[in-house]
Image 1 (cartoon, helix red, strand yellow):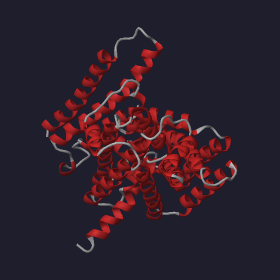
Image 2 (cartoon, rainbow, N blue to C red):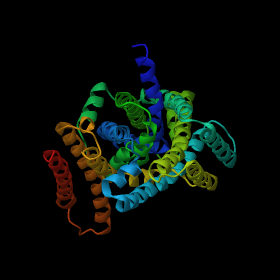
Image 3 (cartoon, rainbow, N blue to C red):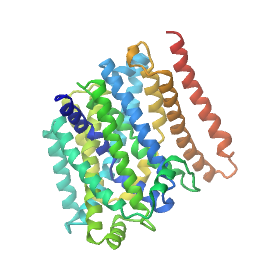
Image 4 (tube, one colour):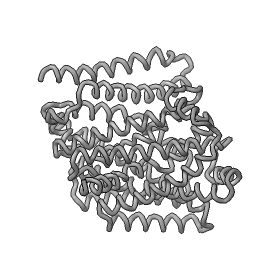
Length: 425
């Protein structure tokens, strides 16, 4: 018992990298926009995406621990060396590009938080942040990086909880809107964004790197604590967003909170925004380097070059002062489209009897839950695509006539592949 508590705490600290990664400026932008425009009606999406994130992160980490294979090696073993290698580079390359896109938003969001407190020049702050991030990644080891991220997550949690306590809602409202899904008109992209900002594709690869050397029970504890804390922070941000009549910039947001809470409201937003941006500015290049090693099989120097390139992309956009909010929202929305593909891959591989020992394969009930998660992710992604097509071509068929059959068909094919394999055992 004496050893169990420290081990559990160490696992939670180690896995704090996940909550630090998905609670970034994009989460703040998306969740505040959701609360401002739709009050609590999209709170259910935060709850769903949090539990779906726990399930998918657990799958990816369990795959790595049970097989002692990286995701790249698992792809090659599952699909053959040639096809698996091509898929590895396709998926890994897309994730690294996503990390670079996120890094721009991370840098800009963190700078926006600093500028709410410090009247320093924009370029100076960007360069100082770049030096800080590079120092942590260059000198830090996995445990020390996790410790820094844990501190930043604690700061975020305190700041956004303080802001959320001033929202206009009751406990009954929280329960009702968390459990019952609502689909208000015009909320499609924000709903997808809330899911995409929680179930971040590069976090799945990040998790396989973090899980190295852990046992499955400790991994599950660490994943659950980290993701649930991250989901709670996202919910607090959405609740704080209910105070905002319209969200156009972080400065306007700070003025609203300052009016409601005094100077503490502005300070809380600044600290939360900076912590979110700085933590994600560390994890995005870190994840890109892990993708390079676990998917491409690159060695230390090449992985260092990858994280350095991702950081430089963020610094470039930071210096050129691209406005963060449109960039962040676009990245968060596009992020949702590749989630069903990653989900399908993980579900297939974790059920592969040639790769996964029977004791580590999910049972029938858990597989049904995973299929429902896949269907929900696919529905959200296809619904967003359909909305875009409908706007471009007014005569296009209604989305229920197109999207629902596609979701049912794809889920059915995936389910058949899983349960057919189980019957052949």
